[in-house]
Structure formats: structure tokens, C-alpha cells
Length: 377
Image 1 (cartoon, rainbow, N blue to C red):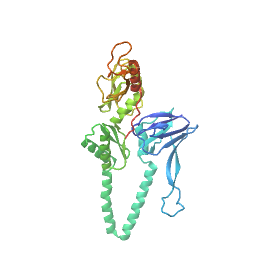
Image 2 (cartoon, one colour):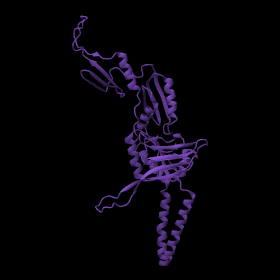
Image 3 (cartoon, helix red, strand yellow):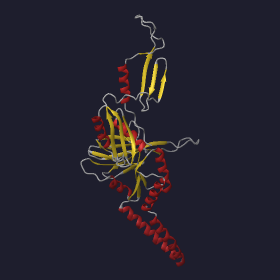
């Protein structure tokens, strides 16, 4: 059986089994494998029984000129572009890098896999060197043809360029990124050189900081920079949704640490959920601290008097607490202010149409319902 590993993005480090058949990968809700930060075209992974994995991407191609000469646009058709995924050879799809391999064999580390993608193969490097030598000899012959003086001038002007190229390599770019991030007070981001590429890891607090980092990196270089850091704001929502435990809240502490707080019905159930979620987190999320109180039956109860919104009418009362839980109560006025028992009843008093236990069960169901995961920016 094959195994799929995500090497970059918010889900970096995640692994899953690929059974024979087709698996659609994209960021939509109907995907077989949903990656919330997917930006490229939809990809279909076709795994045959022999273990060969093919990746098909739908692309638009020209379908020929229209029959009328009235200035209409060229028609297009949809065509599948298929490639075979080789074991332990990463493949880039948009900004996401995927890799497949057998599930019964030890895998190389993520950095080793990324190095095979980011570092040019030896054959390609040798070809580039041969082309450079041919250009050099051609330039030398041309210089001899026009004279010794012209050749000397060319050599003197190209030598400083070669030295400048060595000074402005991957290590120099990584150093510039470190200085720029330090100036922007992004102290939780780290940069390292992998092959010819600078890889940025760590954590930023929110989407505003993410946008600041993106613009900072774009000013330094338009390529050869891999953003492998996470956004704490998105990670908080993702961890809460993945836990799916009523009464749990997650907050970011800094330096890749998150605190799980609140009141839960069962701490044992929460510990199992934390263990399950921790296995799917990447290395940017370093620690999950559980700081909850266990009070069976009280996890869904809102704090008295804490409401972020209250709307009421003659027969319906709607409230929303700061944690996002919505409570709806149905009330109705009695038809006869003086009942047959003879006990007077105030005409303005509302009588709930359901008893207190029914309202409590409804509130617990609303609180226990999982919220949809927010898409990654």
C-alpha cells in the first residue's frame, strides 16, 4: 500500500494511506483529501493495484480558432495532464509539495526529501557547466577575431560579475531574510538554507503578520524562497475544530506553544483527542498545554450574564454568548389572565413553551456541534 506525505504548507508533515483507486486533492469541501491552503488546480491521484501512482491535473488548452471572423475569443478545451509519481521523489503542485512512497519502508526526513527537489541533479549541473564552457570558448574566439584589446576588456568586465554572483548566493539571501525578519520583529521565524533555497519556518501571530512577512520576502527575492511557517490564528481554529470537545478553547502562548483551556465533561476524553490531534501537527507547533477543569454536565453551560448579542420578540428570545454558542427560547403569553384555579396571573408574564430540561438539552446540542474549519489564507 502507498503512503502520501505533505511536505509544505499548513499540513506539512501529515501522512495518510493511499488505497487503490482515485483520490481527489484540493481545498474544497468535496475533496477526498482536503488541504485548506491548496492554491493550485485540482489534482486526482490514481493508485493502481500494482502500486503505481499517477497524478492528473486539469488544464485549459486552446481548441482552435472559431469559424466566424467577428473578433470572438479563441475557444478553449479542458485536458488532463498526467504524470507518474516516483517513490520518495517530491512533486510540486502550486505552492504545495507532495511525495508518495511505500508504507512499509522507513522514509527519509522532510528536509532530505525537499533537498532532492530544491537541489539541481548532478547531470543538469554538468550540462550547465558544459554550456558555460562552450559560451566562454565562443566569446574567446570572438575576442581573438576582433583583437587582443577587445578580449582583455571582456575578461575584465566579466570577472567582477562572477565574484558578485558568488557573494549573492543562497547563503547571502538567507542572511538578508534573517535581517529583514528581525527588523520586522518576527522573532518566532527561523531561516535556513536547503540547497539553493531559503526555507522559512516557525510561527506568526495572525494574518496581518503573515501578509507583512510575504511582502518582506517578495522584496528580497521572487523565487527560491519556501514559506513553511504557520499562522497561529489559523492554528487555533484548526486545533479547536479537530478536538471537537464541548467547552474547550485554544489560545496561543508564543514560541509554538498553545494552551487548551475551558471546562469539559471528561478530561480523559480530551486527553485522547489531544493525542489524536498532536499526531497530525507539524513541527512549527511545538507544544500543547492542557489547562482545563473537569465538571461533568457543565461544559456547555454559558456564564451567567455574559452575552454578546440578545434579540427578543413577543414569542422568541435569541441570545449568543461570547464563545459563539446560540440559545433560542420560545415563550408565549397565557390566553386567560385569570385561570380556573382562581389564582391571578399577571397579563405581561411570559410562560416558556418548553420546560427547563428541554432548553438545557438544546443548548448542549448547539454547543457540541462542531464548527466548520476556517480556510487557510
